Length: 165
Image (spheres, rainbow, N blue to C red):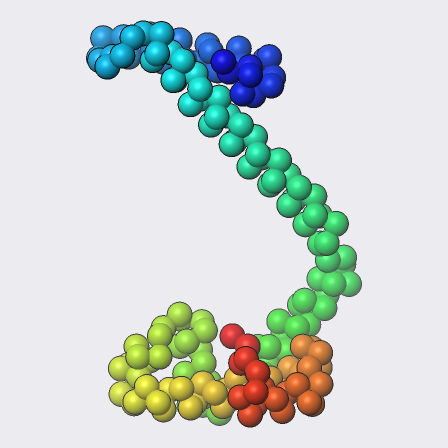
């Protein structure tokens, strides 16, 4: 049964051994609703299917890791990442105090607009407006890093596109 599902003799033998071991461990507390043969077949089938699912996940993860290794940034890419992080930090630091406060509470502390409004004792609409201003200014300051043309920036500023998070 296990070999017909897994198509691997060694895996099937291990599954059969696991089923028998589990049967032995649970021998005193196990209450069979069917025959012992039916229990063994069902247990073997379930373990074999679990094994196949697990192998698919392992294969998928291995493929993803291989792709990640090929796509991983080189040393100059890491340097650019550090420069970008510094540019973002500088851009956030240069925001007006009110917009900066709202931006940091939202992005760094993970607070929702309603929570920010409550903490700062302002309306949610005010939070939305300050956040919009902060994002627009950050978009402008970081445009060279983001590869945004002035046409794209104008479109996102007027609501014609999605505001990046």
